[in-house]
Amino acid sequence: VLLRAFTRLDAYEDSLERAGLRPYVVGGRGYWSQQQVADVCALLATIANPLDDQALLGALASPACGVTPDTLWLLRAAAGGGRHIWPTVEQTAGLGEDEGADVERLGQIPAAELSLLRAFAETIAELRRRTTSLSLAGLIDAAVTETGYDLAVLMRPAGETRFANVRKLMRLAAEFESAEGRDLRGLLDFLAARADADADAQAATAVEGHDGVRIMTIHSAKGLEFDVVAIPHLSRGLLPAARTPLLTLGREQEGPRVGMQLRRLGARGVNLYAQRELCEDAQVREAEEELRLFHVGATRARERLLLSGVIGSSSPSRESHGKAVIERIATAFEIDRERDSTVEVAAPEPRPGLEAAFEPSEIAIRLNLASVERATTLTAVRKEPDAARDDGEGPAPLVARRPAKAARRPLSYTAISTYGEGSEERPLDSDRALRESAGDERAEADRGAARGIAVHSLLEWSQANGWRAPTAELVRRISTSAEVGGGSDFSEETLLAPFQAWLDSSFFAERIQNAERTRTEVPLLVEVGDTVLRGSIDLLVEENGKPPLIVDYKTDRVDGAEIAELVARYEIQQAIYALAVAEARGVSGVELAYVFLERPEHPAVAQWGPAEIEAGRRRLEAKIHRIREG
Image (cartoon, rainbow, N blue to C red; front, side, top):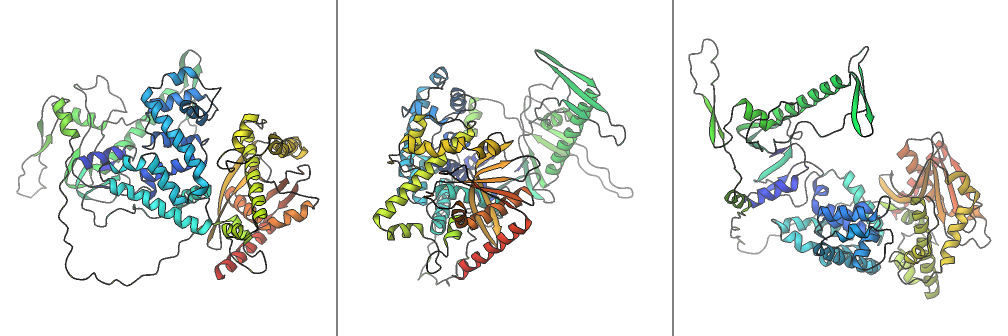
């Protein structure tokens, strides 16, 4: 089956499975393009941060919740522009109040859909409370089980094969946790990076020597031939729906034509100069390119070519450049639009001097007219019984054990920077270190880390909302959230003091408040010494004509220490930040600012040029080498 694109891939897979055929997809992103992988990643991202609207909408649309597109639209409309959807979902479940929600829109959601939203919101809230007590693989297992996602997948055709994608995701999560620790956000960053870098074009569950139906794009099939080729959905128009551009330029080498469209409020636009002719030329070129692509697909067949699409009961009354391929075929061959028929194609003329004659060919036309009986036939499920398995006789063969290939796993900033601390070099095991520490020290460390997470969350929210001060209710919700610890008792003053000091500082007013572009929690991946380092930047500030400014907030207690001495502890982090941003942005220098929120008036600001960045790379390579040798 050759497709123009993978837009409706699931529909074709389901149809082939219902017909008793075995489809598999060739090309795309392999395992990472599987729907189950995208669904579970969206579910995990929602558990990590329900305010991630894109992940939340993906989870709501997946079988983990299963609400309709109409409900998603009503939720978005009820939340309002520029506001997160999760508080509105919480209101529908009775878990919170969203004062800005449009109650009229929420009232239009059917009762059955509200029940699904309520169950989903309660499950996500419970999973968020348990994230610290579950392993990453256990969290995936709990998420797909408690939302009913596992049953929804297993009930589909080839459900075991589909659910194998989820099991593989659990294995990846377990491997990540053994190397990097229990870090849900880190796992999501790792999976995203792995999806971009993975060169494996097949899903893990694909069968070698597959004898079923291959599905691929026409572009992927260039240069290949097959005995039987099917090209569906030929009723698709050749021209995508698009607005007329405001400015159009001709392709002439000298003196190109110019076209413009003047748009008027409440009236039709006015085409100026050569706008109409240039748009017409562009449509002709695009239609010709689509027809050439169809020709490529049709010529991949050696013996049989199946073309399908929906045609009208009569020929279109007007011609257009976007006329669908199936309508062009029906018109050219004067196909009977009411019953099955055949079209006779004249035989080719023999070459001069060859005494031969050929019979004319016939093209079979089969019409599927709409009817209840036809719909029943199309939706019927045909599944052949599984063949009996021959278990053989005698003992199982002995297979030589093959050593596992070492995975290329990312290192976190914490892992590489902490390695080597203490009397002897050792890899970081933060869980073990906490267990071995005294009870009071561990409690104090946990409390400090929870406070840092809460303050960072407030700063991230404030940046996304025009650096506004958070409300007391928001501070309370963040301080009692699962990410902070759920049971913390931080006062409003404790969390707002460092936050307000940052907003009142001269550095914020001069360098941050009116900057052209700021982004928080920017994920980074950088390759050093054949190892991938990962992390995230608290705040990245970019302005035209200036080097990128990397801001790192620190909630460490200063206690009279010199800022320069405290910053010296983070030389590895500085090297990673500078190298990652310089490579990603293609710049020769960056600016680093470490802001200790107890003293935001005195940030440690440093300029890193090519020499400093290269020296930092060498330090990183040396430390990575010691980790490998250790």
